[in-house]
Length: 238
Image (cartoon, rainbow, N blue to C red):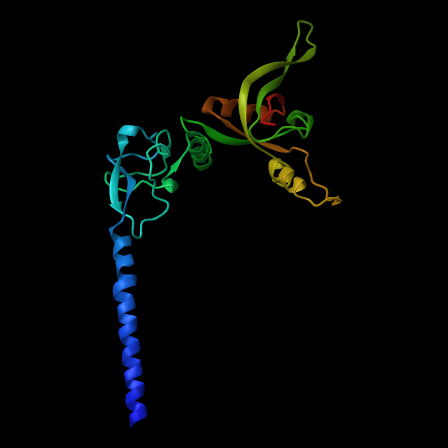
């Protein structure tokens, strides 16, 4: 019985000590952390996605630091000049994940739309020969001039052939081989090969995907049907 009482007394004393530690050491620290504040950046007006952030669109606000995400911006400077990647609403915290540079936003937008704004379309044309596709040099992102083979009879009734510029500065969206593989993708695969790997890839161009307008599409289709198409590389991405 004495041992049981002594054991209960020991447990009681231990509980009192623990309560004192919590009351005088842990709780003050806890309340102190809750009472601490930090300056954060809030959106001061509704902002549409794609808008470049100006200093007038955001404001500084003091909020409790407890539980505040590390992604929330603490200064206006990193936000000014950046682009909103989604719609932002007045009063919201501004986070780094919802912003990107103008160049990054433009790139992402083009990837999402494939650059088909303002009436632009994609069209795939088959090359009559490898030479018509600038051998294996042409790549996605290049621009090219389109030449047409013209046949006509001269005054003597003899057929003559000459070449004339049909379109200039056409954007190349992609170049494909006979297996419909992107030559740009094959370039990346080849570069990733370990040293000594002799894997062969088909870099002979068979099709080209152009980004162009409706009028240019009609011309390209006509040239493809008559095997009169030839390209000249005018600007390479690399």
